[in-house]
Image (cartoon, rainbow, N blue to C red):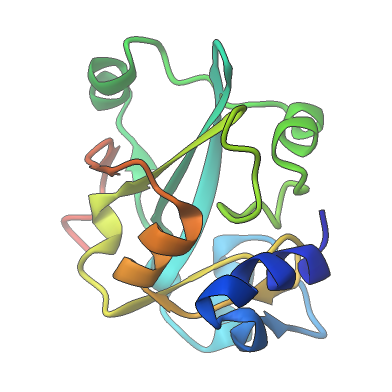
Length: 159
């Protein structure tokens, strides 16, 4: 997948022209926040986990961390992140540019974490290590076809 592919996907919601590409890396939360001029918590990072049928993508706030007991209670399995090769194979996006858009719904289940709901808008990546789009939480759930809002993160409540 590419940024162009993600733009084509986002076109159905009129968000294709909102995709930003930077002359610098935005492959980490801190780099993305710097490129956008926002606090790191507003970066909507997409985390990739093993699932028996493919993978689980959890879109969470940049300052949130997976809470293993909450993850296990929700999904009935230990939180095991995918290797970079698995991420690319299952999502079509490279690590540092993984986004919840334009993924195969038969292999990839997308969820959004409640850690994002404290912001009016957030910034997920768009398929490369130097791209992002600003979306409201409602737009994020719609464009990602998120299955549901979940609560599987920690450390963000104190921020």
